[in-house]
Length: 238
Image (cartoon, rainbow, N blue to C red; front, side, top):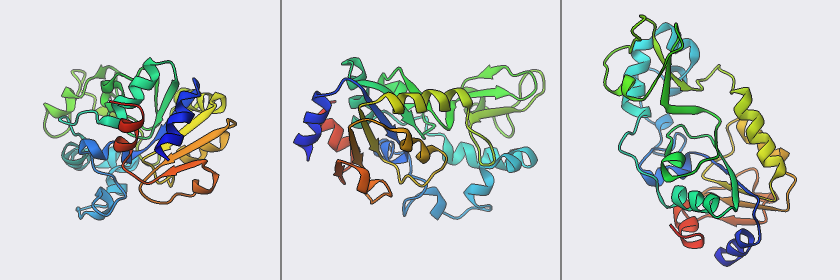
């Protein structure tokens, strides 16, 4: 399967990568839905509740207690998967990365064209004056981070009950529609509307790199169950 994937990559200069939490687990960032993921740990409130718009608006202090503890991994480094994808872009083969992750590791690895469907922990903004802040505004503060104007600083991430950014969605969909090869990696494909974007693909080859089965397996030309960093690191190099 590795050789087959290598041939597909070598034969295309119009690849799009669609990835989820499994891309970053090899960097030490937990997968929300795995056995050891956040959704299987015990908190005062369920993670789905804490990471909702209404909870943020009504209990921002409790939100930030959880957010700083579990959603920010400042020491995480790009792994072989991130580095391989950046290399493919530099070679002119990969046209875009569409990610459900909010860790910024694709950009840290060198990827330039990245559509972050769910935003990024690296960006934050004041809800009152709309001034933008880096991650330090959250990590170097305690309690509820506030702007100089007195407004609450909010992470630029898509919480439950919030819609995706239109510009990001449009860019991601267009990239997928134009791609010849779609590589899907590290995602259960259970999160919508993001997973639904794959239905826009009109190209020739679908590659699925995921440890567990997904609803898209039957549509894929190549399915590999090994760790995504291992696969891309070996096929592309890192």
